[in-house]
Image (cartoon, rainbow, N blue to C red):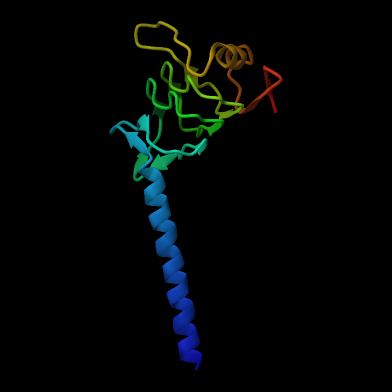
Length: 146
């Protein structure tokens, strides 16, 4: 009887671990990345997205141009490993919450041209606040820091 109970517990534990790993792989399939760790395309349907710090063995370091454009997002959390976000990466969404690391360059291209990443109001607010890490929220049409 004891051996049966122990085997049952072990089987349940293994099943839970396999399910968690499977869910993680399915979540990671929502992101198309290049070999340098840039998210090129978001293919998921969630409106609240937490971008992982790593996908597989690749650390996420950048968000590519238009990667999350027009995805109906309401909130996004960007990991501290990201240092550059390409132009129009989050445009066309209904974002009301953005969690972002410090000193992330928004919309700066190699030609040193500036292009908006989120929308003009958020980009300007983030830059005016000295690119500080934190959660930014949109309330009554104005961005503020939590």
